[in-house]
Structure formats: C-alpha cells, structure tokens
Image (cartoon, rainbow, N blue to C red):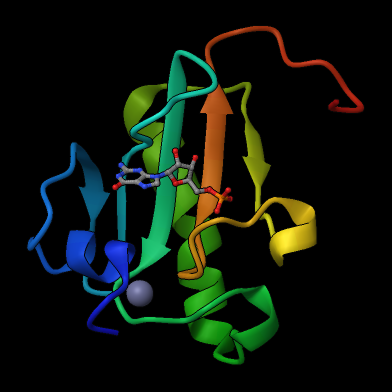
Length: 110
Ligand code: 5GP
Ligand code: ZN
C-alpha cells in the first residue's frame, strides 16, 4: 500500500536496520525500542492486521521468521507480541510481530 510506512520499509523506500529477510518477510529494529532487543517481523506484502491475514503459509513464514531471527541472534528468552486493533495498541496497520528481549520481562505485562 503506497502510504504504508512498513510497505516502504519492506521495499527499501524508507531505511531500516535490517536483521533478517527472505522472499516473504523482513525483520528490522524497532525505531523506539522498549527493550535492548526489539525487532519487528513483517510480511513484505501489505496485510493490515491478524484479522485480515488469511494466508496460512504467510502466517507460518511470520512465526518461523521469529525463530530465524532469534536463532541468528542467539536469543533463547524472548517475548513475541502481535497487537491487533487500536484498542490493543496497534499503531501501524501493516501486521508485525514484535520480538522483545534483553531484559527481564514480567508476566502478565502491564
Ligand atoms: P504497534 O503499536 O503497531 O504494535 O507497533 C508499532 C511499532 O512500530 C512501534 O513499536 C514503533 O516504535 C514502531 N515503528 C513505527 N514507525 C517506525 C519506523 O518508521 N521505523 C521503525 N523501525 N519502527 C517503527
Ligand atoms: Zn503495508
């Protein structure tokens, strides 16, 4: 989508600190990290949120991408978050999986 910030990151129009990519997904550092490690995994094609994601293969690619990133960085303890909808804190309407790590993470979150 032309005015989507994560589409622009996916196609290189907006620079990002890329951590991992393949044919289907890209992973890059969050611009406003909430932990020493805060990475976003996105599909290269535009999907608004988990509510709109119908492609099971892409779903698997996204979660497998989390494993690729954590394996690459040697991270064993991490949190994976998908905020879906404004009421749940979603601010960018191009689906993304947060990978958060590098500090103690309490549960349940605040
Ligand atoms: P949400 O609240 O939608 O789940 O998360 C959006 C995330 O995207 C936030 O953590 C925010 O810091 C990050 N973000 C927003 N704009 C940019 C950007 O232009 N570049 C990067 N790298 N991250 C961004
Ligand atoms: Zn997009």
